[in-house]
Structure formats: C-alpha cells, structure tokens
Length: 378
Image 1 (spheres, rainbow, N blue to C red):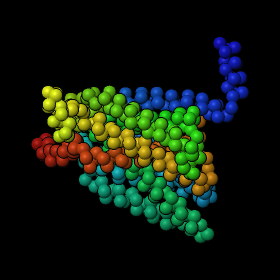
Image 2 (image 1 turned 90 degrees about the horizontal axis):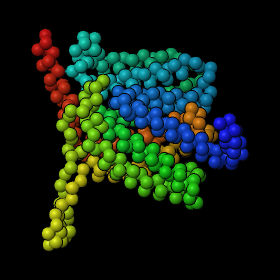
Image 3 (image 1 turned 180 degrees about the horizontal axis):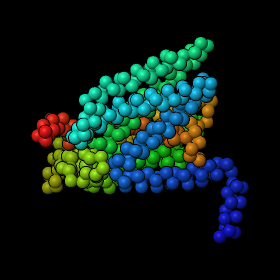
Image 4 (image 1 turned 45 degrees about the vertical axis):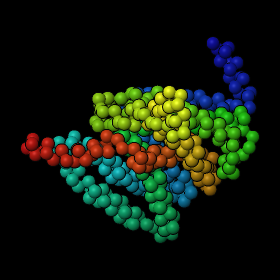
C-alpha cells in the first residue's frame, strides 16, 4: 500500500497542472455531490439549513471582497454591521414564509403569536437600528468608502438573501422542485467542463476564456437528457413531490398534485387522423412535470451559465481569481452557486406563473382556520 501511494503521489506531482487540477476538481465534486445526497435524504428541514449555510458563506465571501476593495480594515464594526443587516433581512423575509406555511403551529405559543402579529413592525424597527448605527459610524474622510460599502452590503443582500428566499419557497412546494433544478445545474456545470476539457476548441465568451462552444453545447444536451431521466425517476415518490406542511415531518400522505399524475393529451389533428385511420390510439400519455423539467433544463443549460459569466465579470472587475478557497479545485462557495441562485429564482417564478399546486391554497386555509382553532381552544 505504501509503495502504491508513493507511486501515485509521484505520478500525480509529475503530471501537468491542468491534469492535477482536473483530478482535484473531480475528487471534490464527488465529495460535494455525496454530501448533498445525504442532506437530501434527511428531508426538507436539512435542505433549508443547507440553503442558510450556503447563503451565509456566500455573503461572507462577497463582503470580504468589499472590505478589501474599500480598505475598511480600520472599521471592524462595519463588518459586524453588514452581518447585522443580513440577520435582519433573513428575519423579515423568511419570517414571512414561516408565517404563511406554519401559522397554526406558531400561533399556539403566546410569544410566537406576538412575533407573528407584529412581525413587520419588529423587522422595520430592527432595520432602523442598523440604519442609525450606520449614520452614527460615519467618519470624516471616509464618507465615500462607507457609503460605497453600505450600498455593497445592500446589493449583496438583494442578490443573496432574496434569491435564497425563492429557493426555500421551491422547497415548500415539494422537494422535487428544489432537487431537480439543482441537479440540472450540477450536471450542466460538470458536463460543460468535461466536454470543454476534452473537445473544447472554440472560445465562447471573452469574460471566461476557458469556456468553449463545445462545452456549452455538450453541457446543454446532457442537461436536457439528464433532467428528463431524473424527473421520471422522482415524479412518483411522495416524499419528493408532496408539499412541505410540517417543519420536522416529511409529508408523504398528500394528494399527489396534478403535475405529477399521468395525463392524456391528444395529438395534433393531422397526426391524430393518421393514427385513427391506422386504428391506433391518437393520444400520448405523459407526466406534466417531465415537460416542466425540459423547460427548466433549457433554462439551466442556456441561461443558467450567464450567472457564471456575471460572476466572472465581477471577479475580473476586482482582479481576483476566485471568491474564496474553501473548496480545493473550485474556489469559494460563490464560485459554485452563482448559477444556482439564478436558477432558483427562475423556478420560483415558473411555479407561481404556470403551476398551481396544493400549497397555493394551503396558506389561505391556514390563515382562515388558525383563528377558529385558537378561539375553540380558548
């Protein structure tokens, strides 16, 4: 074993930097995917905790860049103020979600009932505290830097917290609405890298010189195929398709939403006439979610990469290679989740525009029934 390790180490170190990076990147990709699969198996609560953890780390990476750019090391309280605004934003945005979905559970407790009733007032008061804190911290000679970093913090909150909110909304609709889009982005990222590494010849965009048309097209085709297969694998599993109705119990006894039930569609008239003449069934049978997955896969493969291009432009603007170094071979978490944020927002918009799930009426039922339950118990 020692001889094998020594030979492997020698061959690894003697290989070209490109291949060394390929191996390191591949190993840590497998590790991250394995950890993600474990968290998925633990249910929606773990997934929400994962979203929060990633959000905090991405915020940390971007704020650190801002502090370095504006040379604010002499103002240690400014870092604390940025984190204060992050906590305040999360309290407001995610508090609204919890109230919508778990109002009955939360209103059973008198203290939580108070927080629900005055949630927006408390949120605004917390923000005012941060706003006054910022004004009192202004120092002559640093006004421009301080206001620039104040704006930096709020734009980061808009990009990170708001899009994290959309992602968690997707989890509430059913784990499948989170898992499939995330897996599509991972597939697109991996396959684009693989096709580009082995077959890439034609540059795609100047912002990312290593990106090629071969990788872009190969990743797109692979993502559509992968998305359809994964959708077929998951659509009939209640633990993935049922909306989240409790924060600690997986919902597996729901009425399966129509998007995940096999439906009959009639073929267009010329084809249907032909099938009738041949005495064949002029219908096709398909699960609607598979069609939705094709739309999501097209977005993930065609528009999703522009989240990465945006991040590349940002890094070039400030002359940095990566957002961080937490993942060997990959950089920071923001380097890996730039496309995920854009994808999560698209899926949330898509659901609320084209999909009508059981959870669309669930918050309304909660609101109308909670008062009755409370009055009955009193």
